[in-house]
Length: 99
Image: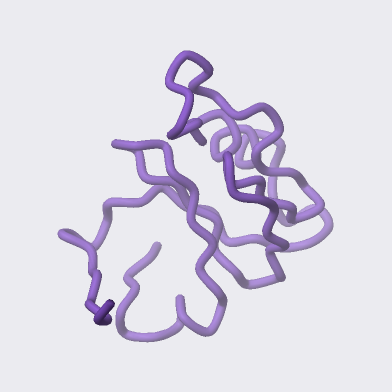
């Protein structure tokens, strides 16, 4: 197997919120992300309940749990509902444009 590259087709294709502990995120922000994360294996059960929590836990359907740290970006692809966790360091680089 050889390595390859992957990139985004546009600079604004993911819906995201920057994660912060405490009161940094509103319930609406958390719900917006959580409610749009879809189960990519079982299409008859498209929404993954509790997919993102105020504690920073991001449940990736059929794969496991990731812990967001302050400054990380939690995002989802609106076309597929697949979640992404982008580290604060990576988000600060030139590869990612966010607002």
